[in-house]
Each structure stands twice: as structure tokens, then as C-alpha cells.
View 1 (cartoon, rainbow, N blue to C red):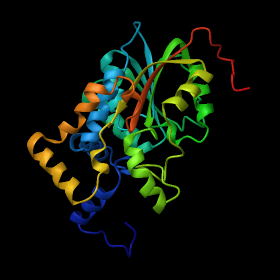
View 2 (view 1 turned 90 degrees about the vertical axis):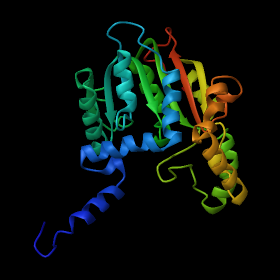
View 3 (view 1 turned 180 degrees about the vertical axis):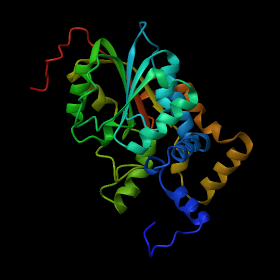
View 4 (view 1 turned 60 degrees about the vertical axis):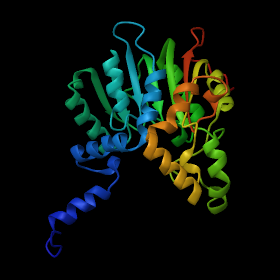
Length: 290
């Protein structure tokens, strides 16, 4: 450290490091530990991952290639590699990609994954494909030009290739409970990551956008159907704690497992997931918006 700036005690350094968000932590091992801790301690995060696993397609051919767009710390990347895909994993955050690299090495599957540091929405160079599958989990809501993003995805998928989109849903019970109060305080409220999200989506909106770019939605899933954390006040906290003590927090996710894949619940969860197939007759030079 520079002269005149004495190094703080080791304990203080550790405390400061713990307060840094995992995707901003420059220590890849610590970043990965924080990332994995999120899945261990957050019932929402762990069940959301399980929901994605239920809807994620297996490779349709030997040598199938998948793109994990916005790979973060690599949970989906690892799953894709385990399913048999050769994977290209990309993220715009260098710290997140470094954590993903450690994750892949720990899982001994680094040889099946190519890591690319890229702000993909602005620059697709080096991600030409063609891909059998593209996964974009909790990504599209961050992108200003979402139509342009879907156009580029369609151009990089093989005919009959698949796209898995996961995003937040303003047709969810969680949104209807939280939005009125949250928007009254902050007119720019956009959910749990208000400073980063551009817009909300829902099933009809996604269906229209996907069809405009040659995609046919084949499977929908709603997650976090029962928004138990959105209920505030003494009574609901007592009730939630009683259920936690008796059955565990897992009990709140039974509706997801039983109903999440079925209409109308597959369009109602706070997290909405859609698997879509690129129509074989859609041309990569086609632009159906114009």
C-alpha cells in the first residue's frame, strides 16, 4: 500500500471483503464461496435453480453446443456440461467469470467449457455459434435493446435450436403484492434489483416477442408462486415462522413443484421461464419487425 495509508488489520480486511458483492470480489475463490453460499442459504435461489433444471433440455445430438449467456458463477454452466453439452459461457463481469473458472476447475469440467468475457448485448464477436441451445437466465431484463438481443440469438441458433429465457414477471402474485407499495416510494422500482433492471416481462409479452423472431414457445414454468416473503406484519411473520419451524422453508415451494408447469400457474410465478424452439423455416436474415 502507498506510504501514509497504513494497512488495516487483517480482520477488518476480511470484513470488508465479505461485504463486497460476489460478482465484484476480485478474489475468485472468495467470490465463488459467496456465490455458492447464496444457493445454500437462499431457498428462492436453490429452488429457482431446480426449476430451471426441470425445464432445461438434454442435448439432441452428439457434440451439441450450448451458450450460457450471463453465466455468473457457473451453476447453469456446470449443469449444461454435466448434461453433455460443449459450453460457451460468457459474462460481462470479469470477477464473475473468474469465479466461474474456479467453479469449473473444482468440478473437473473446464475442458468442456470456453469462457468469454464479453458484454454480449453490445458485441457478439467471438460468439458466432451456431448453437444448439442458448440459456439466458435473469438477463433480458437488464438489456435496453431486448428485441435486438432476440434477433441476435435467433441468428446464432441452428434451425430447431432452443432458447431458454428466465426473467421476472409482472403477472405474478408477488408483483401485485409488492408493486403498489414499492412504486409509491420509488416510481422507478423494478423489483429486487431496481438499479439494474430495465423492464418487467410476462407470458403474453414474451410470447409475442419470441414469435416475432421465429421462436415457438413449447414449455412455460412459473416459480415462486406463493410469495410468502411479500406478506408483512406481525401476524404473517408469526405464521411464516411457525411453518418454517414445523415444515421448513421448503414447504413454501410445494406449489411450484406441483403446479409450476401447468396452466395458468406456468404464467404466474415471480420468475417466469420459457423454453422456445427456433422454427426451421425462419431465415437468419429475416427481420419480422420491419
